[in-house]
Image (cartoon, rainbow, N blue to C red; front, side, top):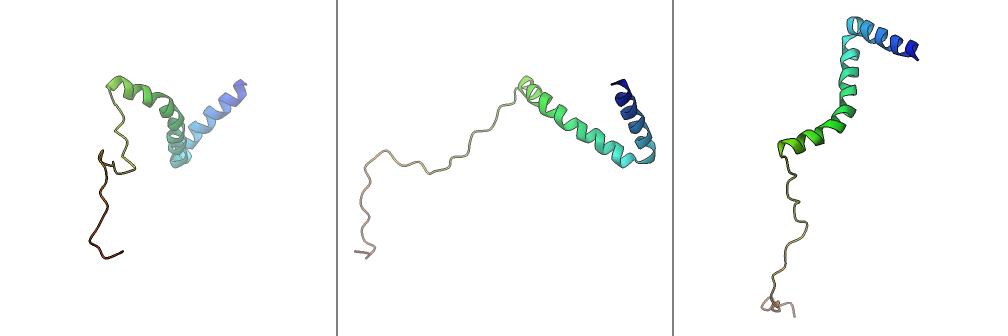
Length: 74
């Protein structure tokens, strides 16, 4: 168990010097799942509220609809 942890730490230390692009890619990649767990709670603490949903249909008026006339389609 500890051998795997030490090998990982050794690899990260070596990659930071020999291949910094891979090292920082691993750091940024590890930040993603952490952000998924922490960002919603931080947003709620700051008072963030989601925007209103965009309407997907046009609201119809609350009256009787009159028939259309005068377009010569009869």
